[in-house]
Amino acid sequence: NYFPSIEAALTQPVEDFLDRAFARLNERPADEP
Image 1 (cartoon, rainbow, N blue to C red):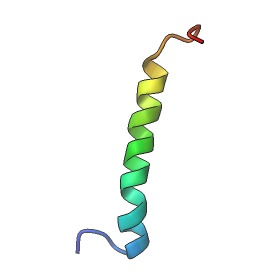
Image 2 (image 1 turned 90 degrees about the vertical axis):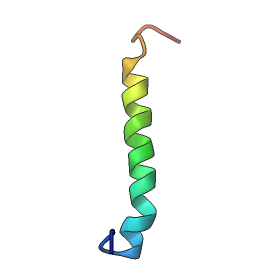
Image 3 (image 1 turned 180 degrees about the vertical axis):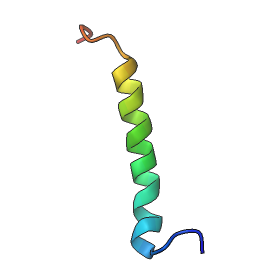
Image 4 (image 1 turned 30 degrees about the vertical axis):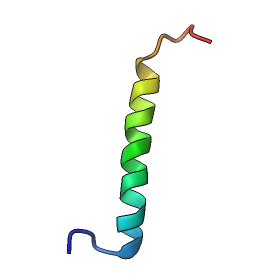
């Protein structure tokens, strides 16, 4: 099994998406509206 639990299988893709989304947001200029 790749994931240790069903919960991990369901939450990992969401966590990965949020990590990428926040990284992209942090790349934006701080003064951008």
